[in-house]
Length: 359
Image: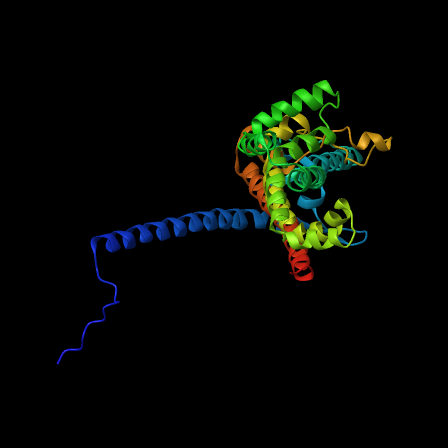
């Protein structure tokens, strides 16, 4: 006798078959996006890593080794023939080499050698001023955004009464999150650079980038505050604590992991923006580092170089060749490493807070 069929078994149907097909399409699309992302990262790593790795050289002073690409400023590259060899030198090295050869020829009472080098802008030296400027822009803007965003989220969630005005404010915050970055750049240029008179400076860039990422910080911080159980507030208030003491001691510590999540999202957006800093903070070339100023106040009111803007300039504003391509991929590789390091630090700190504050 045949075994009775299971009445609860899934029966094949057109709808279920179609559902499997749609699920397969979604899975394939997800894997395709992941593969595209991995291909881009692999391309940057494979082409950018040699630029950084080949830039190590020994020095006569401590620590006796340095990396010219990471710790020197951008220079023009000179490519020329000398004694049957093809040489590549940065601007400073080429000038020193030419002076040494001219002095050698003068000592031997021979005519000075003539060099006919081909020059390539920004294809020698390194990106140290760009690294410093990028870190300063990210840290400064995220500090401002987190302070203003957390304060706004506390007010909206803990103090403000739900009504048409508060709902309108929340809607405006959500709409601001979708505004293109170029609009924030023009706003920062008009408000901070011209109206406030800050010129192209770190301060103007900080506030422009902070306002750009502020909607994300406010929304994520408010959701984190809502996730804290009301019993924490009621118990604290019942024991005689004030409203602010309750928020500071019993709400904010447990909402910090979610707030740090917003900082991770903000870092990823702030670090990669080019349009806002193009109008408010970034210079194409700046020889001095930000702390090389006469007055301490001048530190905040000077422009800086930045990695995304440097990539933009090297990729689109100068003639392209094999030397500029090397700089492009090397800069992109270092840029990804810096963003990943800052984001990873936030993730580690967030995980520590999660393990510390549990309910």
